[in-house]
Amino acid sequence: MGHGIAQAFATADHLVDIYEPDPDRRACVRDQVRANLRLLGSDEAAGDLITLHDDLADAVGQAAVVIEAVPESLDLKQKLFIEVEAAAPASALLASNTSAIPITSIMSVLQDRRRGMGAHWWNPPHLIPLVEVVQGRDTGEAEIAAMMALLSSIGKTPVHVRKDVPGFIGNRLQHAMWREAIALVQGGICDAETVDTVVKASFGRRLSVLGPLENADLVGTDLALMVHQTILPDLDRTSGPLPLLEELVRAGHLGMKTGKGFREWNGESAQEVRNALARHLAQTLCPEQGRMHEGS
Ligand SMILES: NC(=O)c1ccc[n+]([C@@H]2O[C@H](COP(=O)([O-])OP(=O)(O)OC[C@H]3O[C@@H](n4cnc5c(N)ncnc54)[C@H](O)[C@@H]3O)[C@@H](O)[C@H]2O)c1
Image (cartoon, rainbow, N blue to C red; front, side):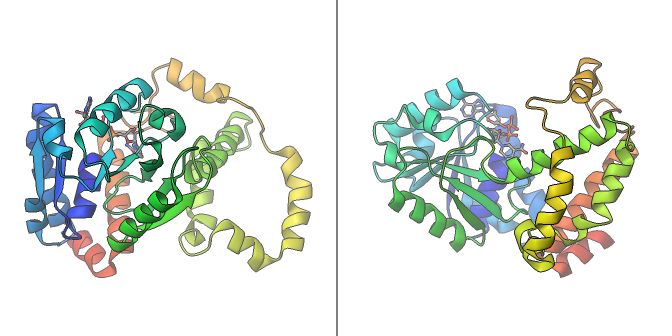
């Protein structure tokens, strides 16, 4: 995520400093960014605005904004923010890209908690517009507004998450659907491929131009109410992970990386999905570039 976030700022002409302690990863970052830009048919020179560091204080010493994207561990993130606060300018905004750890807990280690917040990017960060800007219990309104303005200025679509709830907004919605998808397969209503076909060939087609609540208004809230009276009592409401998912993980069926998850995969079919996704996202970003990518 880190190199994609760096790319998003660099392509908007910002200087970016990355602290990466792993020498192998550090050596690859510029090449990864340049490869992404090449695929999009964009100017690779943006990669030159990114500087790599093996020392945290060097990386954040002049920063106006620090975005953390280290592995998902509260302890690791807290330790990092203590070091960041000691080394970064007192005015710097400090944000975590955590997927699920409460922002208030991560930022509780700061002396000045007003400037600590979540900035939850979506993968791949240089292609997906949304960034959820998450207000922890102690985050200042002005600091949230400054982050929202910065993200808008680089062409992102920031949204303000006003309360620090697990999964913020996007992942709560996404995983509510995944739970029901798994329940449908677990309950023998259909197989996993059918679930995917139903989504991709129906409401999935509309989702990027019609959000769920716009859709409810489109069909009418009266119809939405009638449908909910019938369907909601029957939806899965298991409060933890579903047994089918736990069984797959226990059996080592971890998805594309092991050749089997909910569905069966080989190297070729997994790559086809990845390519289709990359083509689709590039095309959404810029239709002309999507076509170029497709032809290459
Ligand atoms: N991968 C996703 O789709 C995704 C999406 C949204 C948010 N996130 C969140 O972003 C964060 C990073 O996820 P990722 O998938 O990029 O992980 P990753 O493992 O690919 O990258 C983490 C990077 O942090 C570096 N690192 C490890 N310890 C460090 C330390 N002490 N100081 C500085 N750098 C250190 C690693 O060398 C590595 O380059 C996590 O909190 C994750 O939950 C991930």
